[in-house]
Image 1 (tube, rainbow, N blue to C red):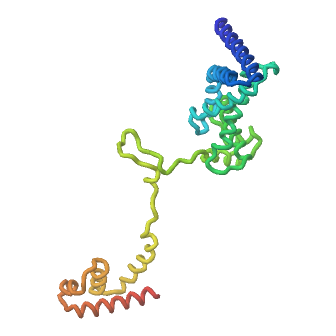
Image 2 (image 1 turned 60 degrees about the vertical axis):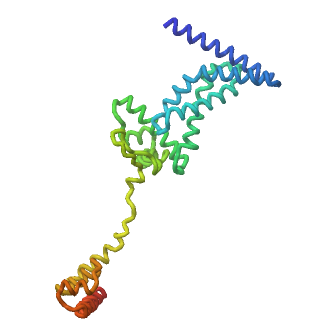
Image 3 (image 1 turned 120 degrees about the horizontal axis):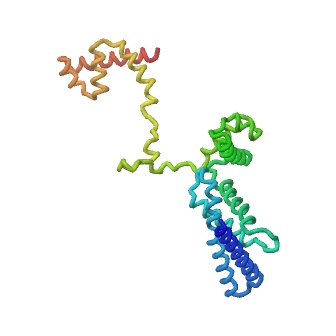
Length: 266
């Protein structure tokens, strides 16, 4: 324990020394050499505090964003903290940098994380619900009920449900996203599983009416209509099947169609 405290103390001292150099270099930035020295010192501080960025970014991984992306955003916040830090404030750099890093990550979620336009009030309530779920789950050893979340946050049950549903507004999946499994060599995307408009659906009612109208025909008339319009046979071919003349088939067809028109009009 003593060795760990000594190491932490040495790291803080090293950070203070580097920040002091950075501050002095910032004041004297007038030449390319000074600019280079400033960038070198800042890079040293960034590398030395990446563990802090990773630790803070990991708190947001349950919001649907990759950890690597959050670390990049948090690193931007770290750089801003380094550039703005003033030794004269008398606070530890990590104490100053932490809210700056967290603020940058939260700003990322607020400005870029939502795939749909969501009111700020609901965004903030969604974030509060996420934090409340984590806290109450630890305290009670189970996931909290919606009513318990509402009581804890001083909101209505309807507002809590609406805020929870907002999680689906983060980064909507692309229709070209691959959903195939490693066990299945065939590639599949979301669009492959989405049904298309059924062109036959609009004809469903017409088919039902036609089926009812066909009942008004006798056997020969029904056979002529079926062969002529469903199997696309010529009148001559139908005549051979019925062992009659083509002229007779023509009269049967005309009579059958007239019956169908009458029934369908009714």
